[in-house]
Length: 422
Ligand code: NAD
Image (cartoon, rainbow, N blue to C red; front, side):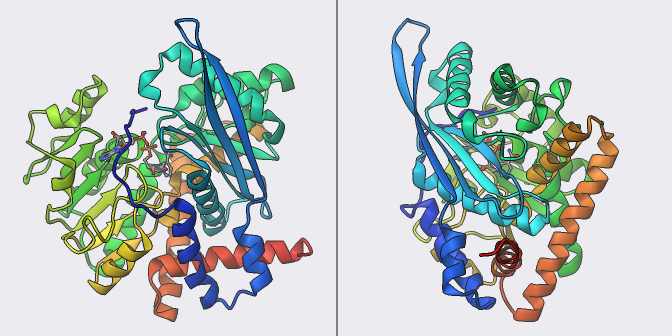
């Protein structure tokens, strides 16, 4: 878990971003107006007040959300983030993306997301545990292995999932399948922690082959060096021979044109030190990261970071790979399209996490453990199948990858809604 502070982000809300991109795809498949209403409105929104006893004896009150966007294809699924800017709009936008992501991967889940408005850097570990347990108590009525299954997201990790599991199980009996991204010792899946980064790498590798932008020796820049960014950097370096030349975290970044020594950088970061303080490259600001010429640019931090105002006209890369959720605003997306820069959308690129979460859930229900190799093999098969469907539709309809991915997902969710009688 890496802690983050509020950053300057796009003025457009997550909800508005999701809506404008939704309409383009809905037009492509001639989706009826009533179905658009069903697919845009959330199924259930829960907002809770969270009084928490702080270490100094005071009680502080936080606000938390769990929003279930759609459950037509299965139980709702989606992460929980702890962030000062987590609000209802952002959580709804992210819950909506989860519906499309699970549908595109064709795994039997719907979409949900949760969030607590908090800066976790200001909390001790015990305060964080009390906050997580209080949140679990307040939302447990809408959770369950066949109802809604949380997972980690920004500023939450396997430990936070373990607290949720313990709190839920203390009332309902041992229920490992209520949450994914757990520690392996508590029923987590091998390969879950690196799954999102690994999935991003698989998608990049397919795209590299199909569109002739070699990954081996290819220059990669990554914004964010948390769960997604750090595993992606490590895997691209070790398994694809890509040249990761710059990465950043909330405090700044580092660049080395010869390629970063990833094992060295990972060791530095594991000692809880910022990437910018590492001696294996030149320190840069977060703004400078966007100006570095590269083949692949991977935002893997927060949403709304590629904008018309900040960087869409100046980014110098061949492909933007959305490791983060909603990193590109629709206006910026249009500018990148105009400039001939391809964008691999979030709910294709970063779907490895939820895909392995599905395997974790299935292993918990079967009380059976897969090997790490089996997890990776299945992940590769699932995500590359989704990738191929997007690539084919994108070619057939001359649509962007984002619109094609949306169209496939919308069609699947609409079909499920119709079969249920809507
Ligand atoms: P994390 O908390 O582990 O890491 C976030 C990283 O971003 C940290 O290195 C942090 O310092 C950095 N960061 C924050 N603000 C920044 C800024 N302004 N500039 C540069 N770096 C900044 O979070 P994560 O789990 O890696 O998630 C990252 C993104 O990926 C989020 O958008 C999340 O929704 C998405 N995502 C995560 C998963 C998953 O399995 N963890 C799955 C799908 C999508």
